[in-house]
Length: 287
Image (tube, rainbow, N blue to C red; front, side):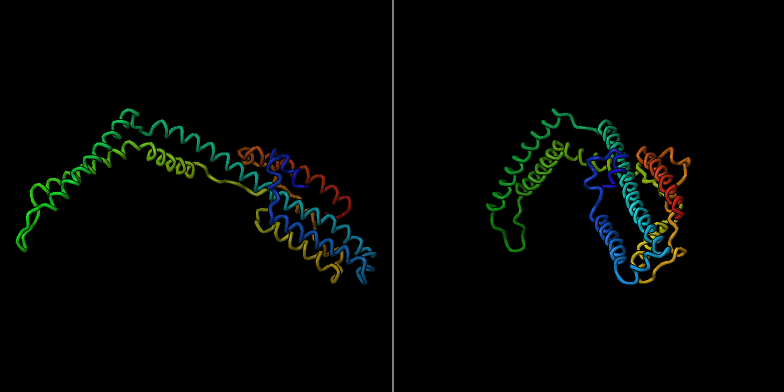
């Protein structure tokens, strides 16, 4: 698999199986089918006759180079995007570990013996709340009947009610305090992710020297269109797309020194391939 060349550069052998995703596979199939269709048409009718002419023979040689160009664009971009993605994941993981270590050291933690005491107090208050609640219910049920319009509440039932509520609140606070580990852990998790989002900035640049983001897509389209319509339009040599400008990796720049090592290695490999491919195109006069 040709993408393995770039994956080997960034030492991602295990990722090679997932590197060529479904979208890239479909694009490969469609592109290769278009080239296969053009070559098959060379055996039929007028196109078969035309392909024997100087223009036809030049087109046939050009189409082989154009297929390599189209594949190179896809493979380079896929390896490029993957290298940046892995760099972001690595930096996020490093920032996450650093932030967690700092927060673990600075976020207060309730001592274990104190949490045990609070949990015990919580159980005692919960039991007391149940008893007082039962007392309140008993006092309300057994309260003497009153005349219409008069309150049936007694001083004892009111006191029992508020004591039951107070004991219940104390029990709840005791349980919450004793379970502070969960709350502390959740808070640390939230703060860690916030720190990662704030500190890890996603910065990247294109591998191609042309800053226009649509440049390569436009070249891909023109290559495909020329191949698909060749059997009807019989393209002359002057109408064939110049392939030289596609093998044009960005020159070494200052920002490259701060880029991930995998990106730097890819750029070196792209430039070496540029030299090889450009030499072939120059030799066959497809500059």
